[in-house]
Each structure stands twice: as structure tokens, then as C-alpha cells.
Length: 147
Image (cartoon, rainbow, N blue to C red):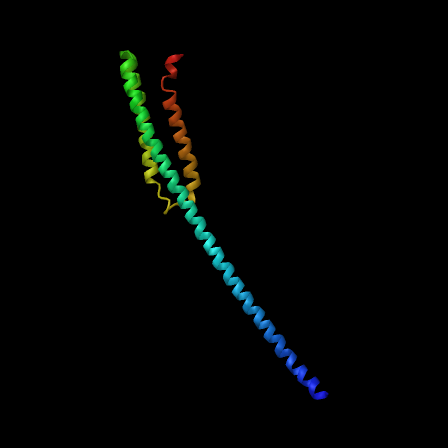
């Protein structure tokens, strides 16, 4: 009986160590799996943010083209309907609108998302404000004359 008891006392620490080793290996595997998942999530988030930028850029380019068309229509309408005094003032305001639109186009093309994506939200906010200001100026082009 003493021999059996001694055997179990000798075997118990070995079994405990084996169980602890297995648990540590499992924890390492679980940690590795979590790290791989986190890396995948980060890559997905980066790709999603990049796609958001590309969509924003495509929409902005389309709006810039629409602005060009609207400014051209304003030019035609102002030349056709205005008297000589207003034509000069309209021409100056149209040139300002064209410059603002060209500035937006340059700003959009100059922004490099891959180089400076940390400033993306600020860039987007400022760009949208500038675009909205230009669209308002185009929409209200003849408003001053109505007063």
C-alpha cells in the first residue's frame, strides 16, 4: 500500500505539470488566434477607409464637373440677358467661381491618402465646406440682382 501511495505522490506532480503545460500551450494558441483576428480586422478597417476615400474622391470629381457645367451655363445666361454694366460684373464673378472650382479640383488631386491618411477626416470636412460654399455661390449667382 505504501508503494502505491508513493507511486501516486510521485505521479501527481508530473500530471499537474503536464496539465499546466497543455493549458499554457492552449493559451498561446488562443492568443495567436486573437492576434491574427485583430490583424485581419485592422486590414479590413484600412481597406474600408481607403474605399471610403476613393468613393469620396469620385463623388467630388463628379460634382466638380457638374460645377463646371453650371458655371458655363451661368456664363451663357449672363452674356445673353445682361446689359453692358452687368456683363463686366458677371464676368468677374464667373471667373471667381471658376477659380474656386479649379482650386477644389487641385486640392482634391493634391491630397495623397496613402501618404497622409491621418488628416483624412479634417481634409474631408474642409473640402465639403468649400464645395458647399461654391455650390451656394453658383445657386445664388443672380440673387443679388433680384433685390
